[in-house]
Image (tube, rainbow, N blue to C red; front, side):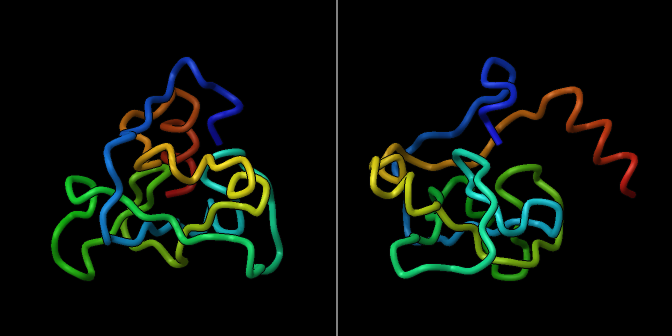
Length: 110
């Protein structure tokens, strides 16, 4: 996701907590760091952990870590390559701001 417009997007990068990150249907099956498409979850992949500030408190109030859309469908994962390169230890991967193109795409899908 961030490989397309690294200058425009900022990630939280705080110390991750116990909250699990979720993604919407649009970002389902993609690594949150490198945007790699995967078909099935492998044992070498890791669930995304987000910080307590990005956790949104109550269960059922989760949002997509990539686009902040409500009602995410799947648990977010790091791909096996990002786990091998230890990019899963860089901090909370939640995107704090969106690029102009992402906002336009979100409006079109609604």
